[in-house]
Image (cartoon, rainbow, N blue to C red; front, side, top):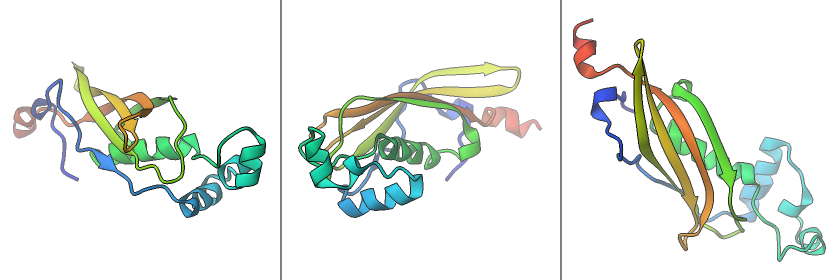
Length: 148
């Protein structure tokens, strides 16, 4: 990942999108173990149907993890100042999720350079599944780096 300089980013710029492969039942089982969230609505079809769902569905936090991967594919984890999401719609087995980010604001104050991002995750049909915002700390303008 390359260093992000404040003066090289403009409001309206987009992060490179991240598209994950179709979600499988195996993905859900692995996420259950990794997250210690063993709610049967995510892995047991009979239980999910008895609960009123058509079938198992994806953990919302897996979608958020994908969004976090979008961010850390662009900046180091230590650059994330804040990151929050709203869950909009259920994601199902077989769905392909694409995460996107757009710079919506830039601020510089006392040598701290921040970008505010609007985030969105959609499925293969373009349906919004997750929205959110993040604030990232980036490097000083390149011109300021040269004078150091």
